[in-house]
Image (cartoon, rainbow, N blue to C red; front, side, top):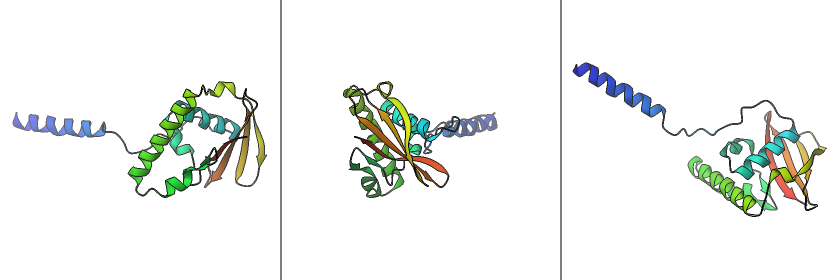
Length: 151
């Protein structure tokens, strides 16, 4: 009987430890996306405040609306601190985007504006007549957004 209780405690401990919050980032696992679809997906996830977007952004080089976010990221030491910083950035961006009435559905005419060996610039038109430009970089065989700007 004592052996059964001990076994049950050990099993419960193992099961519960598997339910603990994982330190791994959520990663987009859908079908492969072309650069235009990828840029749109990243912009949507950012607007929604979805942390799945973390793995889709080149945090080291990110420039967003004229701000060198990458410099702030590079200045932060430690994986946990960087993880907290990127989570806070995503949540803050989403709150700001929504408070200003931002909605990805108001953007139209998503298209490839230019391409070189490592980058694709994706453009979209806003209802306000502004041009949204998103640079998708190809690093080590992966797509990552490195620049978001409004012209």
